[in-house]
Image (cartoon, rainbow, N blue to C red; front, side, top):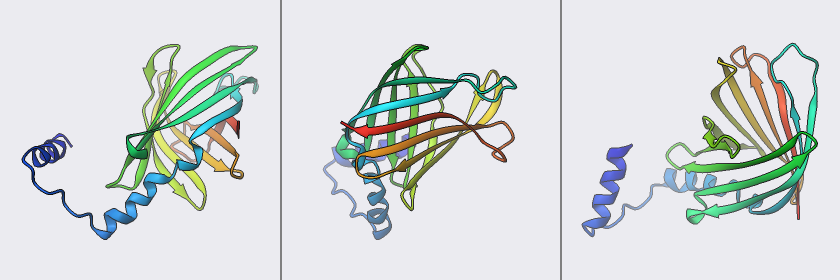
Length: 183
């Protein structure tokens, strides 16, 4: 990837004309607009499973607040500023989303501002109005699969779900549910 970036930079610096995109590249560019509907400010109602993938009984924590989605770099990226609170405390986070035109997919990287760490990205896109994104992570030192799903429920409402799997994706446990309503 560094070589490609270097080649693109060198071409621009030498005054060479930019290559004309192929039909496949033009079609892939449409995926770049998958999140356009979400730009703006949203009221976020959140439920978080207190202890995912454990034997303990399901205890859900509730939070509410806002999500602000801002476009970046001609909408080839966007950032979600997430700030919610509830009886269990406050969650302040960022979600950086980057579009990869070569693969016509998005990466979503979540950072909780409490610890300042960037979680491993999940990758995917939208098909038939549903966004699905998958990746690998760890929970308490053990490897897990992560699935993040986005379902639009109209122009001003959306549902976001995160689920974990500790059996390679055979079964999933939903542990994060957010319902956003446009403000």
